[in-house]
Length: 34
Image (spheres, one colour):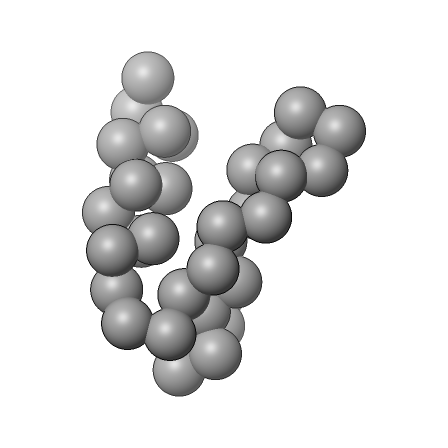
């Protein structure tokens, strides 16, 4: 699960937030938006 590991590492950054919609996981980071 490469994607999940990258999401987890992104979620650890400050100012980030994990949002789950219809089975998709998004990481919203206010300081470094992707």
